[in-house]
Length: 483
Ligand code: ARG
Image (cartoon, rainbow, N blue to C red; front, side, top):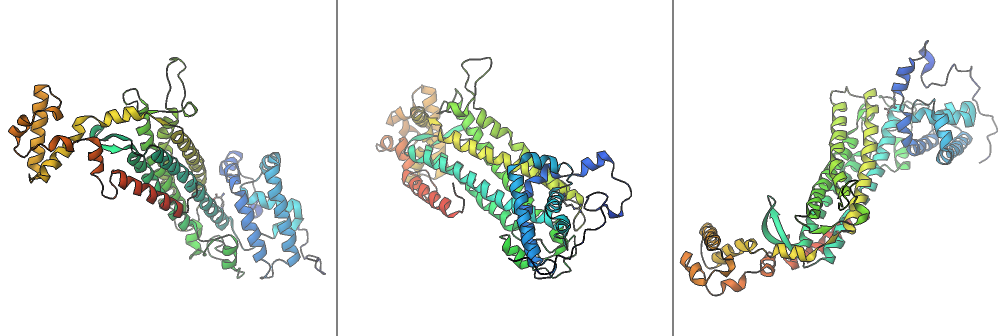
C-alpha cells in the first residue's frame, strides 16, 4: 500500500514524565515495593502471542471507524510483527525491555512506541486492559484445552495398545482390594482409559465457555467508536462476541472450568498411579516398570521405585489447590473488572504445564510397562474367584439367588474345615449341602467360562472387550482429541 498523501496527523506530544499507562493524574510515583507487587509481566508475558494477535485484529478494526488510516494500520501491523519476532528470538531483550513493563499490555505498547514513535500510542484507542486480558486469557485456555486433550488421547492410546497386546490374559479382579472375580487384563486397562475419555468433554466445555470475544467491552461499559466486534471476534477465531461488557471483563468461568477439568484428570491419573504402584510391589508383582520411568534408592541397591507414578499421584493436590484458589478469588467480587482477577493466571499456567507433563509421563510409563502374564494368570486361577459362578450355577438349576449364595458359603466353609480345595470336594459332600449340585458342576467352573459368561456390553467377556476396544478407538477418533 502506498503512503498516504497527507502525513499522519499525530504530533509528538509533550514529553511524558514516564511511560506508565496511567500516570497523568498522579503526582507521586508508587512505592517501590507496591509497584513490584502489582506488576504482572513476569508471568503474563506468556500471553504475548495472544496480545499481539488481539492487537493486530484491533489495529485493522480501527481503520473503518476512521481512527487509523490504511497506512497507519500497515505500519502498526508491521511493527507488531517485528515486536513478535524479536520477543521470540531475543529473550534478553524481552527480559531487559520488559523489566519496566507493568504487564504484557504495557510491554507491547512500549515496544510499539519504540518502533513507531507517537503512533504507537494510538492503538489503545477505545480499549482497556480489562478486555485485553480477558481476551488473551480466553485464547490461552482455548489452546490449553487442545494441548491437554492431546495428552489425554496419548494416554488412552497407550492403554489401548497394551489392552490389544494382552488380549485374552485373565487377572484377579478386585473390589475392596480383595480378590473378587476373574476379569481380562484388557478390561482393566480399558477401565482406566474410560475415566480419561470423560475428561475430554469436560475440557471441551471449558473451551466452549472461553469461546466468546470480549473485545469491544472497554473497561466495563462498551466501546464508543462503533468498533466491529463481530469482525474482531472472527479474526481471532471466536465464534461469537460476549453478551455483556460488564460481565465480559469480570468473567473467569472458562478458567474455572479448565481447572476443574484438570483437577478431574489429575484425580484419574492419581487413581491409575495407585494401581500401578501396587501392581509393581513385590506382593503383587503383576508388572515391571521400565527403567526409563523408575528411579533407584541412594541407599538400597536392589530398589527400583515407581517414582513416575508416585509423583503423578502426589501432584494431584496442586490441581485441587489451583481450583480452590480461583474459586476463592472470584467469590464475593463485585460485578465487572477488579484487580483481584490478576490472580487468575499464575496457578492456571502452572497447572497447565504440570498436567501436560504428567500426561506425557503417564503415556510413556504405560507404553513401556511389562506385564507378568504368568503371575496375572496365577492370581486369576485362585478357585475362590469362582464362588459367584457356583451360585449362578445353582440359580440356573432353579435355586433362588439368596439361597444359592448361602449354599456356596457353606460349601466354602466345609472345604476350609476339611482342608480340601473347594472345587475338589466330592459330589456327595456337595449334595449333602444342596441336592441341586449335579455331575455337570465341576466342568462348568473355570476362569475362561467365568470370564466368557460376562458377555453383556461393558462386561469382561472377550467378545465384549473386543467390541469395547473398537468402540473406544472410534470414540477417541471422533472426540477431536488427537494423540
Ligand atoms: N495485569 C492485569 C490483569 O492481569 C491486566 C488488567 C489491568 N487492568 C487494570 N485496570 N489495572 O488482570
